[in-house]
Image (cartoon, rainbow, N blue to C red; front, side, top):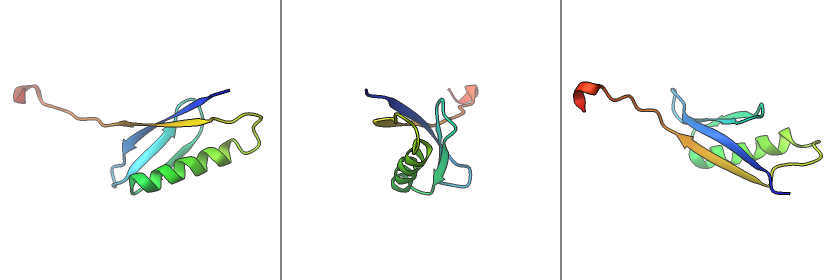
Length: 73
């Protein structure tokens, strides 16, 4: 059974990234993308440690917000 787990990744105000799993209480953060990737995998392993089934695929979805004033358009 292939289960996808999607993490929403956003820039952290203090630098680096915040990651939040959609539909699960899994949160982590890191200073670099590679570090975040490792922390996401670690957080998923810990969260599903005793679960009867666990995700086989983790998707990291990067979301970047940008505000553009209309007078500049």
